[in-house]
Length: 353
Image (cartoon, rainbow, N blue to C red; front, side, top):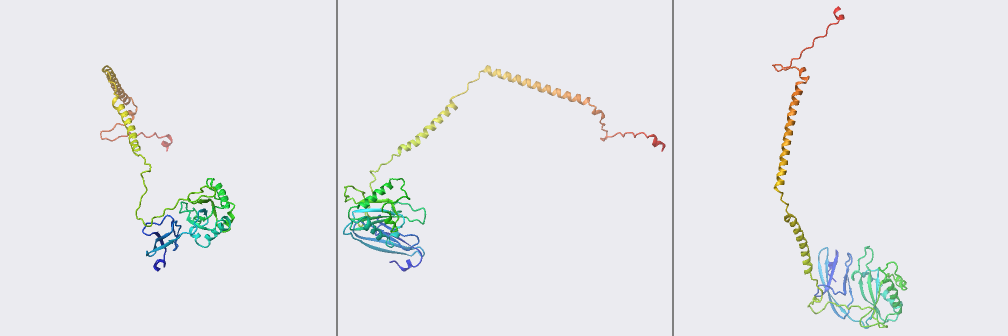
């Protein structure tokens, strides 16, 4: 399909869009996993007609590009499915469903056991759980899961209605249990290696038809594909949407702090500027000054008395001290003359010798 230089070596990345449009319609998906050089383009178009899809390929190794336009011719079935059964499977990815006999095995389960009354049974829609708002599994080894709708031309069978009652009992629990999800038809899917999530089981009736009891099971909103001929874009009207008035919030955020600040400033101004100390009378000032003068005079007299007593005590201590009499007098030459002690007298024994 593409040039040999694109697929020869390296990883090739694919992107697709409707011809002349920036993206694919919301009912069409492009799936490419990991480092695979294969991409899966799938979807279900509600109307018949021709679609032109641009597929852009780029080689991540040599950055060579290639562009191809794929023309798809969509034709309506002779008998369209008016009733659909929606199921969720946990052990499959979207690319696994299109490999092998998974689709045919799933149709055989409904055709042979659960919906025998319907002459036409086929898969109407397929989507990944991640593409419709689900979460990526925490464990990278786990599958993302898929959601499949199986359509039929006749009303739902009693087996399907029984399954819906059993599934409603599980959906009423919050949150939906992952371990206990067994129903009466569990073994039919397990035998074909399908692991169903019965919390995602639903019976859907298209808006044009009612079931046998005159009750609407579920309203399936019709797809609104991107127009193929009109180039004009009409954005939704924003006039009827409610708008929030931010003026009151803005004024409140300014006035309330300003009022509190003004109150604090006015209070501080009153304390600092408006309250003055009373003037002291002159008689009281003279009384305090006379007391202060008397105190200073007494302090001066006490200090003089202490000085005179200290001087007289030093004079008396120097005159009567015996230490001055024993000390040698300094000579005029400035040296000290020590008196030699007389030698001891000779004893009688030394004189006889």
